[in-house]
Length: 99
Image (cartoon, rainbow, N blue to C red; front, side):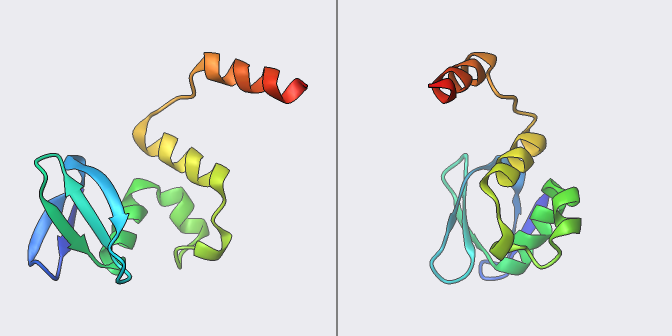
């Protein structure tokens, strides 16, 4: 997935991005594996998020910032990355909750 940086007039491959942070001006700073930093505005970030998790986007077409839920966000990240919860961590969480 590629997103466009209007400020820097360049395209960024999201597969090469290691970190995403707020740029403090309503946009996002993408830091690539090679250390390159690129600013992306909210519009392009939203387009990328539509691709990362289209099901969530359908339920929150305006970005849904007021209804962001940590569990939903975690599930969306896990779905997009293919990550799974470590069974050992899951069992430890159950034991801690039983006290």
